[in-house]
Image (cartoon, rainbow, N blue to C red; front, side, top):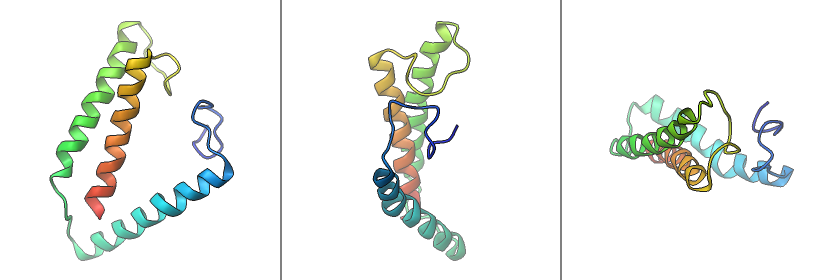
Length: 104
């Protein structure tokens, strides 16, 4: 049940080439920059934390709609309405951007 084997989320399935592209363009540089910044002891974009809070708020709003339907645990956007699914994805996207902004 991981992103890479994609057993849980079939709506966002990546091909092998897509997984390679994600790894080479985002994951490897982010890890390298993170290690560099940890060794140097600096974070260049501390304002990015406010973007993370906004992304977290969007994520919580979308999850609150499920809790109001008495769905306590869910993964992915299967049980969400279209608008709430978009908020869910945007929240995750903003949090991912913050990781990149914090360490670049």
